[in-house]
Image (tube, protein in one colour):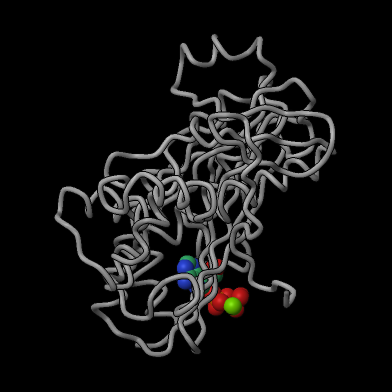
Length: 320
Ligand code: ADP
Ligand code: MG
């Protein structure tokens, strides 16, 4: 099967590639064309997943397809954007038809769930890697940035943390667990749910926001730096799931929740006066506060500073 047959058969024919709101021209020409309503800005983000780095070399291609799109789409949620479309740049070592069928189906499932149309891409040969670029729209000037947190704001998250990090030994086949514990954790890893509705509710309310991908403390560090403030996280307020606690125990669950990555849950800062109206519409967990100063500190129930030295995952970390 040649490049064009492959594109047509697996991608151009997918349900998610048949156009949709905002898509004026999809796959097949030199560029796709998007329509943007007056007064809105285009939000754009790219993520690359490399085999052996971001996912195991041997894994279920359907799950990989849905995860590849979800992790990229989560950036739209974090900006408060409404999803429009995405492109897929796929590098493949060989054309395995069963693999491609399952990958394209998983991708299509997540695309329809996220209301993202597939509008183009690139297909090349080489070691397996997947690059997804997502496009969304947001009313001009209302995107949620990392830079607006102010002392006195609350620090909040939109859901339980640590599930995907807790799932890693299961994903890698290093450990097993009863299905009742394993399944919810594996679902979090393979099928993150970008928090679009929450992101859109936060427009005009939150002062800063992002999606947690590198770990809570590391990502809070990005808000602290961009906003020129300090963030304080209360460990006992960080929400963790029953499945994670059951699998690794309560202490390790909190460790995974603050330092593990791949959550794709929103973290945001909120003036206290905004909390009750937001909580009336969606679950919000207050986990700390914004102070004058810099950096991120972690506190125990007694208010003792228990900030760990190592935070989050970085690809190009300086040697210690
Ligand atoms: P060009 O040579 O002009 O860059 P290509 O031959 O790479 O175009 O691709 C032909 C069409 O197929 C383009 O519209 C491109 O966006 C689309 N396309 C290529 N690969 C993919 C893919 N993996 N998924 C979706 N669309 C793709
Ligand atoms: Mg090309």
